[in-house]
Image (cartoon, rainbow, N blue to C red; front, side, top):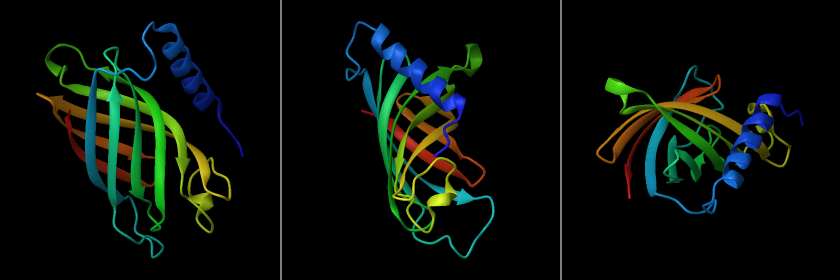
Length: 160
């Protein structure tokens, strides 16, 4: 398994930020649930199953977050992504737009599809780093999530 430097740095910064805060890592400001579907950049006979995705995120007041996503991957295998990350809101007139970067543990891409994500073991455990762009206003939002060089995920969500 080959882990790249950017993944290590992101996890180190996130864990350091959690430890530097006086609040506990599990305390949060609000929950955000979002669900959606994804489309592939190119079609393949190997892609099967429903392209459904759902995630629950706990957002902190300082724009850090953690969450769990459940989905069937492109090959019909039930998969999970447990992650932490950060939101960066755009300034001024663009304040409802945000960029989000998450990193975490990905499970579910098993043989014979274990080589479809860059960092993965044959038993389905790997690491994911996922960027997204989104818009959120009055507790409702939408995100465009970039799934590497494979697909785009479109989600709609709301705060709780």
